[in-house]
Length: 324
Image 1: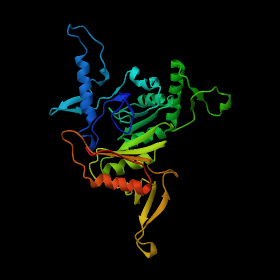
Image 2: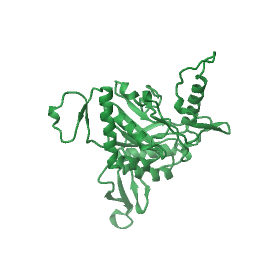
Image 3: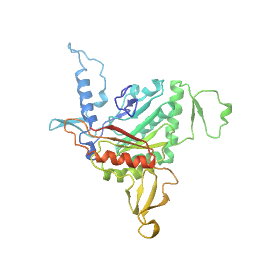
């Protein structure tokens, strides 16, 4: 958790859940594995003073999340919910921030219980002055969780409890309530879903991962949908995303499928066949970056330039983070 993040596209990081497991090629040199091992070692070292008396442990929930394989830290698959002081940290940040959610794991990991995600979303719900940026490689789990009608009710039940227990100065507006009768102050509408202050992102390092995750992302209710193509390990054509069972490719930047015209006056041009995700839009933002570190895999300059040009043509914001 960091109030000031060195990551250029966010302001702070918040890790309500820690731990993960390797999913695809983009995970091989994950910085979070090394960082988690470091935090665990520092915590172990701080458990006893030189005199042998027990000291307060800084981050005991990291214990067992990594192991050494050929001298390198690797995720074990063990997951842990952070202590309450970390889980509720955004409540104490008064100035609005963009907050990267779970830089030390994956909020939607297949082994994370719904109850843990519910607690995370409840904190996000009662801090509408912040903008949250969860980033996942498990886009299918994110879609199932957010699209489930029961999720909203669980999250808002927890949110109401938080407001009451911690005396948070916020006005909860129930469905079918005349809000003109409510007192002044920041408001949370208990029938609003998805949360308007949550930007949902997926990682995609190659075309294969883009084809798997982006359709899931676009099928998920979200205020903003973004893709982090970092580390970029191959070219990605966001205008030619493959859809299972559908011949025509998806232009994810515009949210439409299309086909190439082969005859007549429009030969060679694209015919867009309409929005396929309930009339919703395409992607809202693309982040691109190369891999860093001693064993970083190189990024060909043509790959980010192609994505930049695709975004420019579609009017989608493009953020270039680093060459590597």
